Image (tube, rainbow, N blue to C red):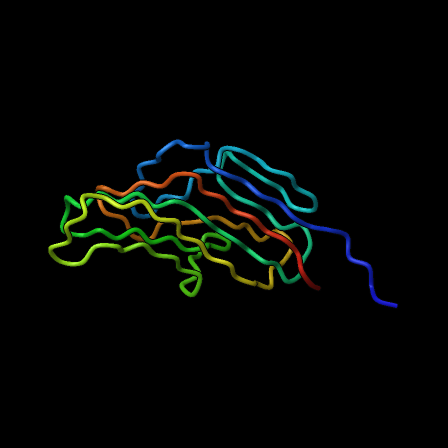
Length: 148
């Protein structure tokens, strides 16, 4: 007989259909709490706090909006744990090459990772690189405990 594990999960989203101007070193602004059990959702500081240690699936998704009227067209996000960006959890949208005919692009970018997290760990999504003409819309962050 296996060990029973109570479901632990939580999710937050940004305001639906609201384009958010983003700058480097901004946390993604989550304004809507979804269902949660065993984690603490905090829209005031855009975080999910873990209440029990274990292995978690962490999923981030957003629609990137980038306008091609700057030298750079990069938009990069990383999961952060306790304020430290996890480099291997990067998701990036860099859709234009030189002399691209596109004026703008709208593309969904997402990332799914597994982390061993401890009680009290705080999960956020950090923009680590953005052009002056970068926005996001319909962002979501979900954590689900999948193991001990």
